[in-house]
Amino acid sequence: MCESDHEVTLMGELGKLRKENQEGHNQTKMSLDRLEQTVLDIQVQMGEHEGRIGKLEDRVGMAEDVAVRHKRALRYLIHRDIDLRRLAE
Image 1 (cartoon, rainbow, N blue to C red):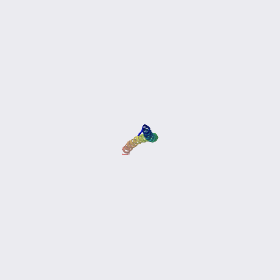
Image 2: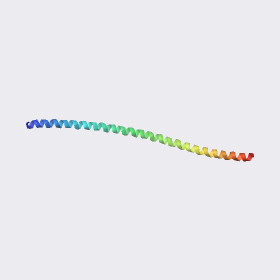
Image 3: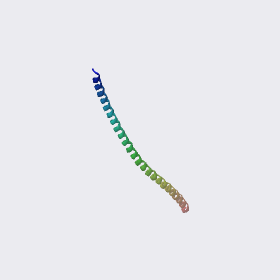
């Protein structure tokens, strides 16, 4: 084999390596693009969940306030009933 044959072989091998490298780069880029989209989707979902959690916290807080008022009213009514029963005796 002469020197020019070696050069042709080397150039062919370099061409193959370049093609493989480019394909690998393209696959990596596609994977990163999918990953970025997945992260963006997760961020959107997290924002939605944070909004829902905030609303739920507000509703739970209001329900707790109502429960406290109901307990006070019930306690008052029970004491009032006891007082009225004593007066009726």
